[in-house]
Length: 152
Image 1 (cartoon, rainbow, N blue to C red):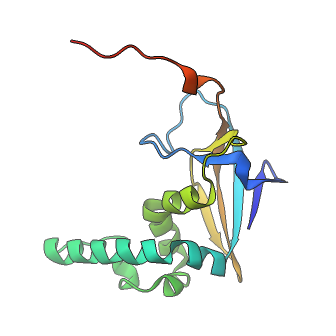
Image 2 (image 1 turned 120 degrees about the vertical axis):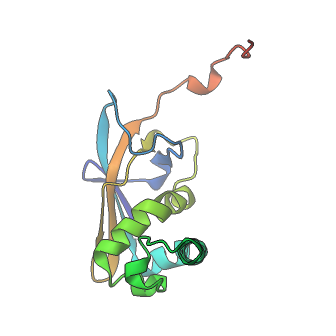
């Protein structure tokens, strides 16, 4: 595994995931580019269980509601087979798995100073997978803010 910030390799501990509902939504925030390179075997080991669970749930829903999902074109294939469906792979991973993967790779630490805020592009190579997205600099001191309880 290799992690890059603006093209320079960095320690993965410097990144943490924004797992909030605003993931991928930007306003007036300054961002920087990040890249994660994983071997296909690393990717499979990290996320195959979650992929199987999500795929099985979606298949049940699709059958119950006679619906079509991102998984339909791939015939609800295994994760290793999904790697041959490049466009579908990107849509499925961006839609269902990227944040599950990132939270495993980038747990919050004292070193965490950049927050992953988007997955913009996923590229499959011969032996690896590259994730590209944007991060923002983590604001210091927010965790110590005191908020007044809400009252009506």
